[in-house]
Image 1 (cartoon, rainbow, N blue to C red):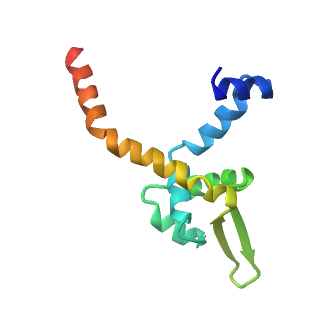
Image 2: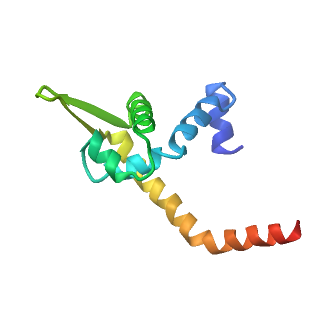
Length: 124
């Protein structure tokens, strides 16, 4: 029995919890936001500038979800105008090593994957 199957049996939810967490972590923007915040806390506008292609709305939604999941903390400073900063929590920081491992795997296997895709297209 795999660790995944064992965890699903213990939880009794058929893997729904794990799939929901992986869906959050593996979405289009989460790892980019987490990697950017690994440099330190940032204001919303600075974070937005450093992530090309993300809309303000998507950044807001993703940050809200990451805050809800305990990966990002949001600090509001009582200033005029108000200043809000986002930073990784210890749980968010713990995501960096596996994310780097996955990115390294992807970079290492790009030639093989591209060759397989081309071979597949040529078969069709």
